[in-house]
Image 1 (tube, one colour):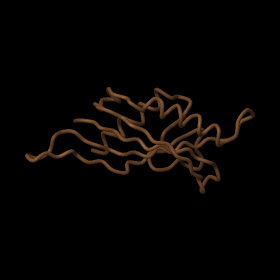
Image 2 (tube, helix red, strand yellow):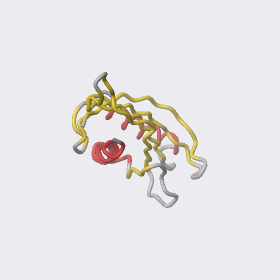
Image 3 (cartoon, helix red, strand yellow):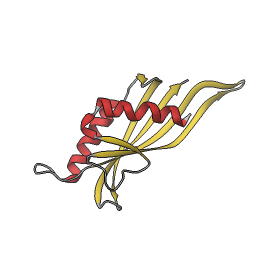
Image 4 (spheres, one colour):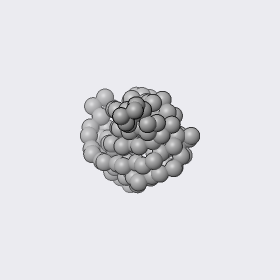
Length: 132
């Protein structure tokens, strides 16, 4: 149910962490306004029982935050700070994200380099347990 996760997660992050900027599916465009972030569904599957589907799903989403240098902080520090705010917002979350009933979120962080933009990125893996 990838569509449900994407429809719930992106507007939720944009509303709860406005300093993160706009979220884009798969990749931040070259001409985007920074900071910005991208998200990609890595895995999304229904939990099964012996009798079939349960209506519960587990998704893994990767989020990459990209920011530029400012007068007060480097590009990496800006990206890492925004990623940390997103992580704090999502980690342990239970509730509704734009109509998506989330049972539990867990986050993991790592850092990388966005070769295309020559900017550092800060990445978050989000495990989302939800139901339809």
